[in-house]
Image (cartoon, rainbow, N blue to C red; front, side, top):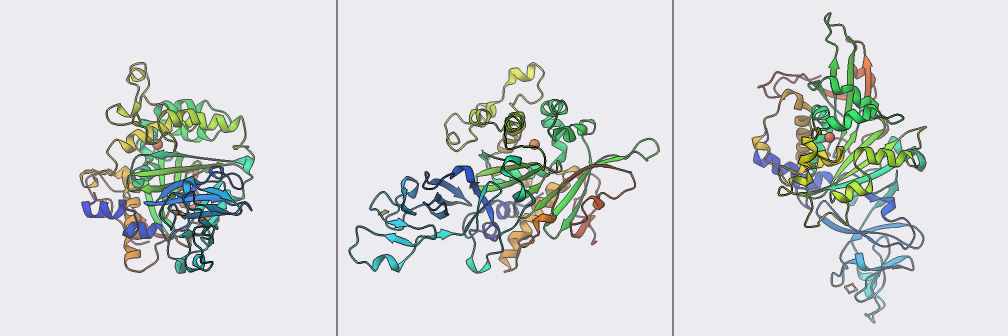
Length: 446
Ligand code: FES
Ligand SMILES: [Fe+2]
């Protein structure tokens, strides 16, 4: 469905690439608060959009995001010392503040030397259990966004992330792909239906229909779509079950379960971070026992993540999931009744996402009508890359995230699902089309 050139344009995110430039117009999560929990804690090395960075917290508790390599002779600041409100390079002791100011250069006699340059530092914020940074041009820096779950108490919010050995689009497109849920995740959905007090029961209702109708609209933040099931009893009057997902550029997903927000951040072209945030006004998702029940059910508990090499300390182990070990699939489990042979949702998604290779060849994909949202995702990302190349702003840079929601509801057959998301500003509608026709062909302006 995409040419090789379009695929490359969409997937490559390093410095100076069109998509990389588009990403760099947004504030994006780079790690969790829990990765840098206390003043002068261990510096946390990361790679984001192909840039190696270090996150650290100074003595006052302020966060800094610096180029990971010391501006002197490039030792990694990941092994530096956090002390006296700065980070000190281990090699010759140069010390930097959170904003990159050079505080000390003990091996240089000239006291003015340190005033002539700064370490490369990036704007940073902390909100909703996440550390956010803006890696783009300073003059174009947008206001820091505010997401609905920023206002949830820590006790009622659950943050967790998993690492994947695949390009970010492969992880992202699975989040706008309603029709895999009751196939790939068949084992987990059955169990979900038996869970009390977790929102999975809503998703479990879908097991009756593997081929929902998909309707997509472009919006002023990206796009939203509805997966519609039912509404087709003998009289054509049955209630319709709709699940609305909102995609906000460049990588934010408001899930139809309403209590889940996700985000896929590229580490580089071939690796990504999958951030999850659950929150609920009444349920203490961030506290035991709910926290562990939730994480264990979806395969995001520490044991499951480590078993599949989805944590930083296990990510690059030689025995990580690969084609040779069938991504750690358990074929005996299949013989004994499991559909997928994987541990849970997280491992199932990861296996199918990384199995095509780090950057899949989309010129060989055959998209079906049910993939309409996947197709919109590709178009939305490519539009963002094109916009930046043409010195325009990508859609969504200034989106009001408080107005962007996922929804899960049963409504009368003649009601328009768009009434469930009145705050979404629709800019263009797309009609469902029959197999064999390009999903873009039958669109019309709204
Ligand atoms: S390399 Fe960092 S102080 Fe010399
Ligand atoms: Fe999935």
